[in-house]
Each structure stands twice: as structure tokens, then as C-alpha cells.
Image 1 (cartoon, rainbow, N blue to C red):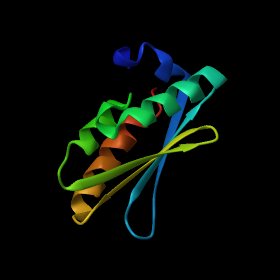
Image 2 (cartoon, rainbow, N blue to C red):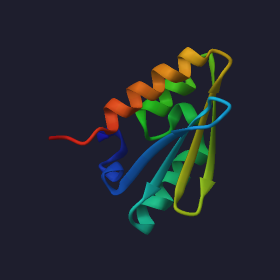
Image 3 (tube, one colour):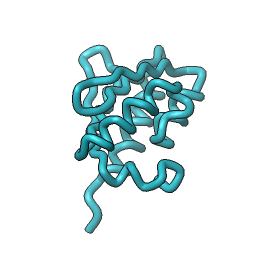
Amino acid sequence: TEACGGMMQSCKMEATRTAAGDLVVHSTGTTPEAVSYLQNQAAISADKFCCPMTQKMATNEACTVKLTKVTDGVQVVVSSQKKEVVDAYEKEFAALTAPTK
């Protein structure tokens, strides 16, 4: 995103759902600089993370968002007592990351 100074172009994101219904988004850096950037952003807070989608989820009172540094970037886990909230974010995320034609 523009707010991230273009660094997100050096990042890849993929999401999966757990058996418990949580949404797990793995943000990986394709360069050492991108990995460092993601990890530094994660250390600030979820509502200020460089991904606007993560910011949106973090400000939703129905969600819990946890960011964890991993070797190649950051793992974002989104959970909610309301399954439909996580379902909506999963669909939104899928649309955001769909390959462009």
C-alpha cells in the first residue's frame, strides 16, 4: 500500500482457516528488508500494522487480532465468537489477493 512506502510490493500474503474457525494470514517478505519491515510493523500494534485489512480487523470490537513474528515475516491470527465476522474477512481477503487478469 502507499502508506507502507511501497514495501508491501516485496511481500506475499496467504490465508487459511483453522478447524476452530480462526483466520490465519501469513505475510512473508521476499527480501530481508521486507521481512524486517513486516516484523518491525508487527511490533507496533495490529491497528497500525502496514496492511489496511489487518488494521480494519484490529479495530473491529468483535475480533481478536494477534500478530506474531515468524522467520520469514509475520503471522496474523484473527478470531471472533461470531463466525460470520471471520467469514466476511476471509471473503474480503480472498478478493484482495485474487490474481489479476
